[in-house]
Every structure is written in structure tokens, then in C-alpha cells.
Image 1: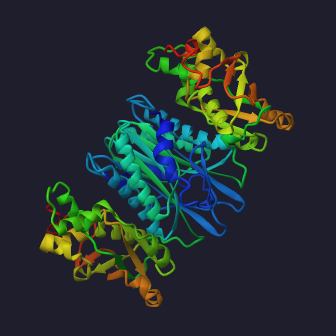
Image 2 (image 1 turned 90 degrees about the vertical axis):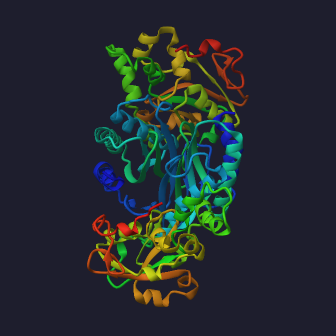
Image 3 (image 1 turned 90 degrees about the horizontal axis):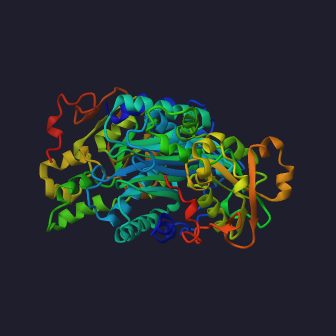
Length: 318
Length: 318
């Protein structure tokens, strides 16, 4: 099976499924062509996924297909962009048809779930590596940036935090408990907050997706906005499964572990107050933006500059 | 040096250099934002480059930076698109500062030469692999596709063919001759035909860039257009250096070796006749499109279906 047959069999079925009017020309030519509606801008992000770095060796290929596209799509959610299409550069050590069948199945599920049509790609031999670029659109001037947070803004996060990080401890568990299965689902099948991001866009002043952990990612907002923040540990949303599995350490996972793909958003108070309850009910307010720099958790500075001095007790021991 | 410092030091200097008004938001946020001018479409293509597959191990990093962006940009040239920006997903085995310095220098030269501004990227650890996505624009409905060739069209190619393929034989040559240096320059520093592609767009019926060899790439046009072609070996443009180095085998390199990044274009005769001489003088007519399927060279069918039966004498022996 050559590269062309491989693409025809496993990847072309992902193209043209959503019949996106925006994709003027899909895979198969030198380039793809996308039409951006009048008054909107193209929003795009690329993410690389390397075996042994971003996912375990011999990771289930259907999970890999879903997770990789979910992680990439999460960047669109963080900008409040409406998803359109994606490209895939795939480097494969061998032409394993069962692997390709399973991988493309997971990728297709995610493609349909997230409304992202395959626009083009490149398939080559080499170490198992994926590079995914996602395309979305926003009204001109309306993408949520990291740099818009202002003192007094509320800070809120979606979902519950720390589940995917805790799941890393159970990837090889032969007989996982129900609680372990629940956190493993967060790791294997993350659901980027595309709908929430797109609808909350007009109310948020700044935002980011939580891929590297709350402290790190909120830190990026603070750096880009030139502000500080105070957050309260008691307000961090934790799943009951995480609390049962990790006890006192649950908070640590929620603060420091990545791969959750939830959103961290800032809101001027008046915007928060007028946002529909159907949106704010999906978010937990965890603190507020401050003029003074530093990221204070329960009064302790845990910004990256303040580490490693006084914050060892929050470090993951896993 | 962490990922952020690495990006700041080596890659941010490639962003914002052209001061493209199209790039509303460059590297550093969850996504980049590009504005597509009214009446134009986004044109994009992704290419992966793997060490040991697409370039030799321990390849000079400045050459790598240039070559990778040139190869990716060549797909824009083939569509007749005007270049705008690019993203880079880079997987590195080690944080080698000298390597990064040299690589980014080569990439920056190419970025400036081709008018492609860095819009975003991802840098991770892993086997040396690059994935580059280039963005351009065309007037709506105007990209050159592979599928537009019609019987009677002229077939023309830019530049001279086979030089980069011949260069592979001299990559390790300790004291290369002037002729070897000339073909090596084609391999290390290919120049995608962006200007020609953009200006010839309105006259061409179909086109592709020659990355896999003339026979393979012209074959893609014929397949996509549902036509055949007759070409003449005597009309293939060969460099004097290639002829001196390879003698009778020069033709073989011109037909079968890749990495030239020249254009192969089809033209309705009336379009060819009214195209400016400043453009047609950059092209050599090598044959014509036929209604009957098959790719005939000097009367011998050398389409992929016809191989390997009667065409062994055209196979590269290198």
C-alpha cells in the first residue's frame, strides 16, 4: 500500500463529511482552499504530538486520534473561535493497517464531534509523530486573547480540574476501579469547550485553555496582561472521583497537572453579571485579577518567579 | 533554556518582520489570527520533513531551514497563490543552541526571500522532525488546480530539471567540482517559483510543483484531469552542468528525480499565445495534453500503470 492508497482508504473519508461550504478545495491538490466569510478572521493553531512525550508508547490508536484533535481544537475554544477544518501531518514507523484503521476511527469521531473537517495533510515514514493544525473563524476583532485581563476581573474555570493528570497514575492499572475509569475517561477522551468558548467570547476579557496546568496557564494570562491574581483553593472545582482517589493531594493535581483542556477565562464583573446563566453555570469563579503582579493562592505567591522557593508542598509526588 | 526562551530567542525574530497587515495576531497566544482580504480565498498546505527520510542525518541546519520552507512554499507557487505566513511544528532531540542559531538563520533567509512571516508554532522534544504549513491567498475561484488540463493544452516546465536529484550523488563529495557545486546549490537552496506562479495563474489550466519527479507529478495532473499526454525528451530543459556530470543519464534524472521545486503547468494554446513573453520565456514547452490516457515519452508509455514493464532503462541507477 502506497501513500496515496493509504490516504484514500483511511483519511479521505474524513474530508467532505461536514460538507462545509467554507472548504472550497479539500485534500488531493497541492494546497487546500478555504473561504473565510466576510467580516470574519481566520484563527489557527498547530500542535505536535510525539510518541513517548505527549502520549505513551503503544498508546491505543483510536484514543490517540481523538486526543490529538481534541488538544488542538482546545486552542480554538480558548480563542472563542468557531471550528472549521484541520490538517494532519502524520509520520509513521510502519504501514500497520489495523493501527491506521483504529487511528482514523478515533480521529473521525473527534472530527465529527468537534465539527472539524479534514482539509489536507502529509503522510511520511519516520518515528510516530503527529502535527495537527486547526482552523476556525471569529468575527473580526473578537478572538479571546491572553492579554485582555484587567484588575478587578473575575477568574473562572470550566469543568473540573486535575482528572487527566491523576489518570496518568492509572494508565497501566489492570483492573481499574469506577473512580479510576472516570478520571481515565478525562485523559483518553478530553472534550474541548468549543461550544462554551464560542458563546462566552463576547463576555470574556481574556482566556486560555488549561493544557499545562492551572497555575502555568493562568500565569500565561497574567504575564500577557501585565497583571496579577488571587485565587482560592476552596473554590477550585474538583471531581468527587479525584477527591476520593487522591485525598489531600487532589488540589495538587488540579493546580499543576495538564491535559484537562478546560478553559480559564477572565470577565469584567458587569459582563459576568449579564452573561446568560446557561453559560456561567458551566464555570466556577476561583478568584480575581489584581493590579499587583504575582499569582497568589490562599495568600501564598505561587507564580513561576516565586517558585521553587516556597511552594514545594504543592509539587506533584507522582 | 525552556521552550518559551527558545521560541523568544530563535523564532520570534521571524515574526512581524514583513509587518504583514494580514497577520492580525502572531505567535504567543493560543492561536494566530489572519485576515483574508475581501474577494480572496485562503490557500494552505502542510509538509512534514523527517531526518533520514527527507534530509540526511546531520544535515546542515541552515540548509534545512531554507529547504524545508522552500519545499512547503513551492505548493503555494503551484496554486499561483500569493505568500502570506507559515507555522512551524519542530521536534528536537536536544536543545543545541548552535543548531538552533543556524537553523533559524536559514529559516529566516527563506522567510524573507519568500515573503512568508512566522505566524505560530510548537516546539517539543523528540526525533528531529519538522512540519511546516504555508498560507497564501488567491482571488476567489482562481487557484491553479491539478484537475483543469484539457486535450490540446500545452505542457510547460520552469527552470531546468534533475539538478537536485543529481546532487544527492555529491552530498558527501569532499572536493566538489564547479559542476557539482552548481547542482548542489539546487538541492540545498531550492527557489520556489512564487513570482512566476502568481503571475502565470490567469493563463494556466492546471499545474503542480515538481517535488517527486516530472513523470510522477505530471502523472498527478493527468489523473486528476482524466487525460493523457505526449512529451518529447529532446525538449526537456537540462542544465549544462547536469549534462556534463551525467551524460546519457541526465535525462533520467530530469524525468524521475525529485526536489527540483520547478513548476509543471498546462495552458490552452490561446492563453499561452497571449501570456507575456516575460513569463513564457521562463518556461519550456515539453509536449501536449491528449484525450487518450497514458503518459507517452517519445511515443513510449511511461505512465505509472505502464511501469515497470518496458521502462527499466529510465530508472535511476544511482
